[in-house]
Amino acid sequence: MSLFRTLTKRRTSLARSSRYMSNIPEDSVYGGPKPQNHNQRVTLTHLRQKHRKGEPITMVTAYDYPSAVHLDSAGIDICLVEDSASMVVHGHDTTLPITLDEMLVHCRAVARGAKRPLLVGDLLFGTYESSSHHVEFLCVTVLNSWKRAEFIRL
Image 1 (cartoon, rainbow, N blue to C red):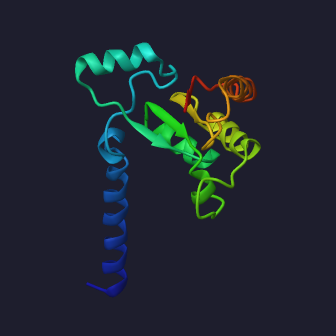
Image 2 (image 1 turned 180 degrees about the vertical axis):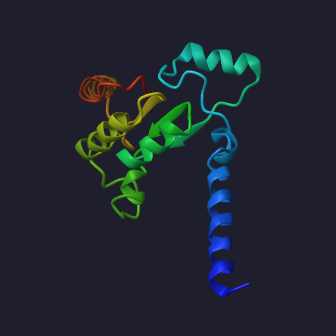
């Protein structure tokens, strides 16, 4: 058999095998089935039902739009945006230097990318130590400027 025939035969068999690879069910390729209703947002009721059934509840921290899109497509239940963005994203040694305005930028970016998960915002370290009125003001500010935040973590 000539070299040309051998190479063409191999190429044809490779083309056939790759064609069959595309017929593998998506849930076995990408690590499991997708959430049953991907468009439905996660609520507290949904989390209670999962807890009663003994199903795991997943939570991931995200600081930016691409991370939020990935955790949304993975079917994560809760997304936390916390002040550790100061160290992870901005390169500071502690969480103290980040400002509320910087946190809100991260919160809005995550809200645009994560359509399904329950969103939890984080107040900055020490903001709740001055007075309860100041904390209420900050919570209202965060909830008003971050349109999709359902919870605030103190």
